[in-house]
Image (cartoon, one colour):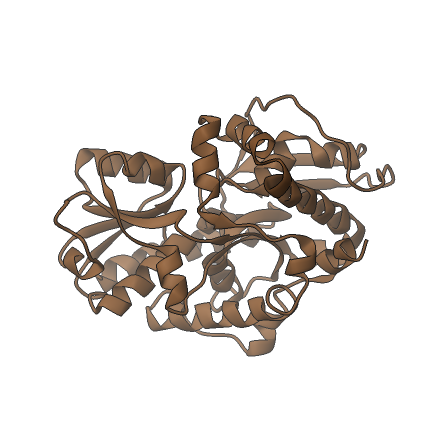
Amino acid sequence: MKRSFVSLAIAGVLTVALAGCVSSGRSDQSSGTGAKADCPVAVDDTFTGAVRIGYQDIPNGDLIVKDAGLLETCLPKAQITWSKFASGATVVQAFGAKSLDLGLLGSAAVAQAVSPPLSLPVQAVWIHDVIGPAESLVAKDASITSVAALKGKRIGVPFASTSHYSLLAALNAAGIENDVTLVNLQPDALLAAWKSGGIDAAFVWDPTLAELQKTGHVVTTAADTAKGGKPTYDLEGARTEFVAANPKFLAVWTAAQNWAVHQLAADPQGAATHISAQLGVPVDEVRTQLAGYTYLDAATQAGAAYLGKQLGSDLQSTAQFLLSQGQIQGVASPDKYAGAVYADAATTVSAK
């Protein structure tokens, strides 16, 4: 990997975050299915606060909640604003600028946000999904059948994302981390670079991944790097100040997300229809994408294997690896990463 390029790109991300200049989010403009759902818990009409939520085009329960208007139904007097973000790096910027209350970002981005030099007061409050083959490394050249064969190539990836973390792990395992050029590209720009010949390979998620596979092939996946001890997740992060001030809101928000996870299991066609409306892709394609992730309900998440204990350790391990790759400037103390996980809402919801 060309260290100078990577360092400058990451420094740019950190500078924007610290300066509080955010141009990453935009208000929601999706049409949706129009099919609303009943609130899975008692409607709370006492909450009148304003909540700014960041989402991404990733096929999971968050898009179901959004499309079904569940938060608006459960909290009819709340002022809820949904804003779309391109990747976890831009969500981190928004947290640094305090322009976002909750937002979807990957575990690598959370680890980066909590670690020096940012050291942001952010907590993971929910696991949207455990990432599997839905994030993959795709190459154009049919002769490239292993990660090692990418030596000397240009690889596109959104920096500070779970795909970036998985790519670094794969390159490290193949012993070629110093022999490739990484290009920092958001998903839309990545697809354009792929079509123009600006990159030879890319590590990214759906729906961009599905587009790349039309003219390329998968070399390795996030499921493979997870087997090597580098698991990744899509998480909901929240500013610690917001979490402390709004436990009742988070309990309702978590109940809505838990409902969506159960919809994915009990009514996959209906769940895919909601997601399809948000992504603008066919339902059958969404069904295929959903197979690349594992979705966990609140009872499972509240246990020691996830929010209850293990996620904090996974965030610390992620930070240690990012430090070894020159992606952050230091690793915080273990209690910092343990404290960056908030399990109370999942525990409350699972007990009902």
